[in-house]
Amino acid sequence: MTGLEEILNESNSFWRCKGPRNDIVLSSRVRLGRNVKSLHFPDVMGDGEMEYLFALADKFAFKEPSGNRCLRINSLDLHYKRLLREKNIITSEMEGSEKSLVVVNKNRGFTLLINDSDHFRIQIIKAGFQIHEAFIDADAVDDELNSIVPYAFSERYGYLSSNPANIGTGLKVSALMHLPVLTMQKRISETVSPVKESGFQITGTLGNSGRIIGGLYIISNRRQFGLTEVDLVETADDIISRIIKLEDDSRDEFFSTSRHELEDTVWRSLGILLYARRLNYVEAVEHLSRVRLGVVMSIIKDYDLVHINDLMVKVQWSHLQEYYGIRFRSIIDSDEFRANMVRAELKNSGELDV
Image (cartoon, rainbow, N blue to C red; front, top):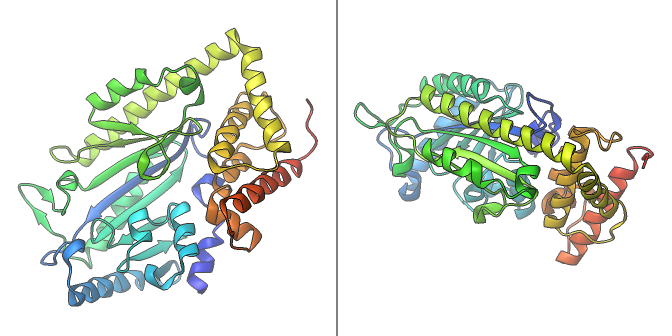
């Protein structure tokens, strides 16, 4: 379990780091999907093919034994599977899979997902607005992996995949954005058309439902075929920059025209977090989102942005269980422990000047 403990205790996770435009862009993520030549795709692989795939993953992992940690997902209990998914180390599909591996390199900040929707998915997540930097790092890992793994590639179609949407570059670019004022002012629709016209999409963050909570959105490309990696990265960069400007302008306007309304919204949320005895996950994220806005706008000066980001992660089910070293018996239990944790973390940050 040493590898798992090292991964879980990693202190340089993206939400605990500061990055460019971290006030609006929490993280930038790049994924490169690759499949092995002459192997069936993950959904229909035989046992022999799976062992061969795992052998390739081990060979890659042992190229840098001091930095790589390899975990078989089916060797973990449900709590640790969910915890890895909540940390964005594995996907929800891998959480329920019996034939997945993950290789994590803490030194270089990449994750290699094995038997997700593709045989291999190289994942880089960076704090703030760093799409270009994430792609450069992912591209370097791609070259290293290709030196060991023969890729399924077509001169006509590009990198092959079982999912037609992933054929081409195999590149998925996304950014997690905090857009609370555009959400409050019901102006998100202004971002939808330009995003769609560019071949991208804007969705919520709550599981596969895409439900929007806390003004948090994921901007990602819908298609990969017919475009180069550079095209996708530059388009993503342009779209995210435009959305940042929209949110920036909305924040400035809201602060100048409705300052008291904004301050009231922020302080009310902080009051609930400081005194509530039960908080469900959605409530916690919604109120932390408003407090985060208050920190960014200097309405609240007692909290660090990274601390609020960390709390938005810690309020998840398995993170709470890990925090207290227990397993919840019911949803009510988790709501009470969530409120206790948030209250304690905020009160330990110092006296508030209200």
